[in-house]
Image 1 (cartoon, helix red, strand yellow):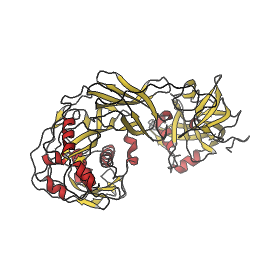
Image 2: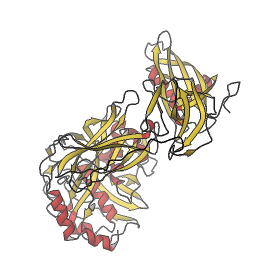
Image 3: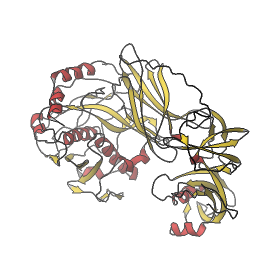
Image 4: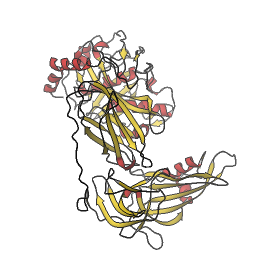
Length: 581
């Protein structure tokens, strides 16, 4: 931060605006349901700041400085550390409110604004687990340390101080009885030290951080710290220390960190399939709202709405992530709206089921909408002609007359055939996941993040995403290769588990790999299931269709692999012998 930035952040006019915005909405919004809570005091172990494990009022705030304070030289580049033990007296525990209510902090010079990452108990991710979500909060150093000026003066890095405040706030929520939200972090953890250098936040926590809980609890608490720390632009990753020692293997669950900084990419498995990072729950969201996040959804299409407290949709539309089904892509879209007075509202993101158009993977964040934005401007879309197709002509793909098959589409889903290239154009027909009589016309279009092929199917001509069609080649027995790859004959409790295990063994580990069950399990004298695995980093052979057979184990519980008959999925053509070219 420059010296000018430092001056601006402590400007009384900025503080006045901050408090005025904070006082705008004293009543809790009608959604989500939220309640008041207190955070119990934790025992002290020379923490980075001897703050009681408490947090101040949640502030609905967007578009203002992340923190307002005096002191510090404003640098962020050199390695800097907040020295432990700057204060030695524990202050009284304040009452704290959860997102959706507002209280003016007692001292504006030392208020930090940030997101903390928690688990919603009212919204679920695709697997039914609590959704991982950001919550907007404020944290007042002056209310939690008897000498805040000394703390700030001892920190030469504003970034390290901001990270420390956010992590201390996150820790303080443990064991708080926070209605509607939960955390995996134990309540007796102490933050010992924070340093920031070369975009890495080195965070030292007490040994209680790796106590209690199973593998999932340990993984999610790491994720909470990583996401909370990396919200700041100057921080890309987190190096974990326990009692000052770099962590190679975390906890008794044996989670391997190898003493390496951890990034958000390492924890995407715990995210909902549409992860909205901004605005966070509890934010003031002026028009246009910038919706940013990542998604792993069919055809990379993320639908959105802005809704007022009465349920009126103020704006709705879609955006396209940089990658789709089977891979995570980023999305960022500005959504304008207009309201006459401040009101509580929601931002909603979801995916439309390709099968029936219903909403799936929906996430809703309560925010405060404020007047002053422009209403969305209606637009008229001119239907494109053959000369105005989106993108540009592309010469790689199935040739005219080639017969292609649908690949990599789940057994309970459908592939959309669209009037023109693009994930949100008119659907002219749909294809079954096992359709294998589709005829290519030889025309292809390259869009910003996808390639589209024109095909003839069901008596109509339309366009499909090239990720979901290929040519089926010959059949090979891959049983021996799989047994070698998995160091023995694999077995599992169910055919679904066995099929998933075998499909995952094909992952080259380079990104873009995906698999889908295209025929669900059947069980009789033998069990069988069929998976498509695609994204093998070979433009000639895109993947395999795996027909997996297994026999029930003698114990009567589970299945043991018998054979895998694999049909090659080709990208450029098939020889008369069935080989990919």
